[in-house]
Image (cartoon, rainbow, N blue to C red; front, side, top):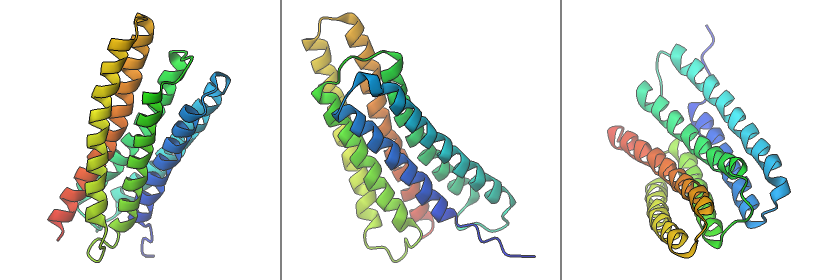
Length: 206
């Protein structure tokens, strides 16, 4: 019987790169906002999300048949699930912009989405180091940096929400952006969740 050559770590990397691609599209859209391009960006990010789902399905199909896995099976699946949640969170933000028929993007939102993008990129770098975690000199620092960026996201969430409720008098605008800002925070939270699971796996497998 041929040995299974499926590379679970490459699957993690591939899915993380999809997350980065989605966050970069979101950042590009926010910084160069054009209302008539909303639907196009929704489609682009949704296509990325579907490709990530296909990668995850392939991952699950392989791990369900594998007798020996690099780490505990449940931990491997948990990491895959959490990376997938990052992409879903980014997709949700873009969908909300479309559903709420947003007319403009605030400076706070541009700064926040840039933070989301940095969080995804840093996480992706950590995941690239995951396969060689015993020799890696950077994985711990990268995971810590993900946590630091998420903390900045928490502060940004409170500051942006505070400005929204103190500077705007339009209740519809306030409602729209309350949900979108919350969605941006969830993107950073999702990255931190991946970081937390990875750190737990590293501790168990030292």
